[in-house]
Image (cartoon, rainbow, N blue to C red; front, side, top):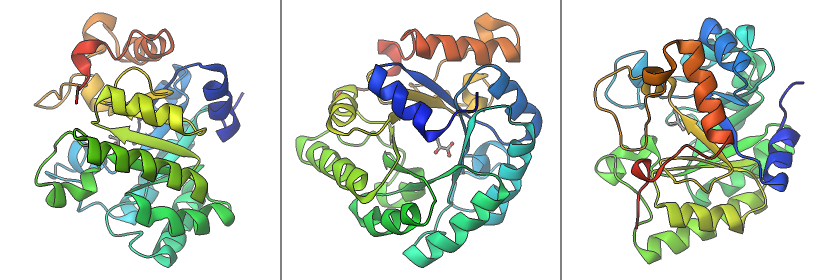
Length: 263
Ligand code: KIV
């Protein structure tokens, strides 16, 4: 059965955890989907893990559309979410035009990074048939504003704002929220405060879903961020690693305390 936005809503309603991984090509999309991963993300992380840049900023809409089409060809039954890259949704009109390209390439949902200022864009996209995931916390497209890749929402003022913005974006029509690198207690608070599914990466064990970058969970690349577990080590095969991630998330064995941040 194909995973849809309703499947994710049902998971939340029933208190079931769900796994999500990045995918950028047809072969890996096939393997990840066959392992029962519910959501495939064509993340702008491809700028770093495929293209070798030191940030996601150089990634273009054409890059994401190309990789979305590749993933769509290999996908079995997962929901396909594609990133709108840096400055492709600076105005609601830009967002609409560029989201259309990703949906026509095979995406079922787009993801945008930001806070309350996204509300108008989310309203416009969702009213016109484009489901939206709002990405909050450590949003990598804002690395130059943050002055580095730092945990967000550690003080009470920032944390309260993030809860407020999450509620606001749900009200504007967001279908999913992603929280990246925030203290576990804040992620639990946001997951409780909204009725839409919340997916975490470095956000503790209490979000409804968990996402990782595929290259990270296979132990590829240099530095291993705190929130990453290498699933290939024990699994012994790439297919086994995807399956191990899926069951660790569903059985609440991942993330463990050593993968989480405190306030
Ligand atoms: O681009 C990406 O891969 C992402 C995930 C880290 C959530 O946004």
